[in-house]
Amino acid sequence: MTGLSTHVLDAVSGRPAQGVRITLHDGAGEQLASGTTDADGRIGDLAGAALATGDYRLVFDTGTWFTDNGIQGFYPEVIISFRNDGNAGHLHVPLLLSPYAYSTYRGS
Image (cartoon, rainbow, N blue to C red; front, side):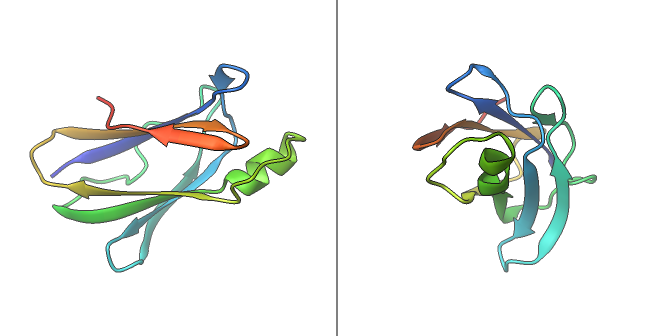
């Protein structure tokens, strides 16, 4: 069983993206949890419980965040699909965000 955290960084300003709404879905598309990034752009424990082995999706509501911050963005949402193979004690899935590009990686 594995915990899950995330972090959103505004890659243009180099600052945390506070106030991004994020939902967690299982492989069948059922919403399991949701939260909003804090002042440091983080959600420390999104699932609220350990995740079982399987496929998941994080949906970042970037369109609302762009609008709320006066930014003309291209992506209304960013979806990151990932697999929990059960071998990690914790999963960290960061998002580096700008109006016309984004990237992610498996963090620690």
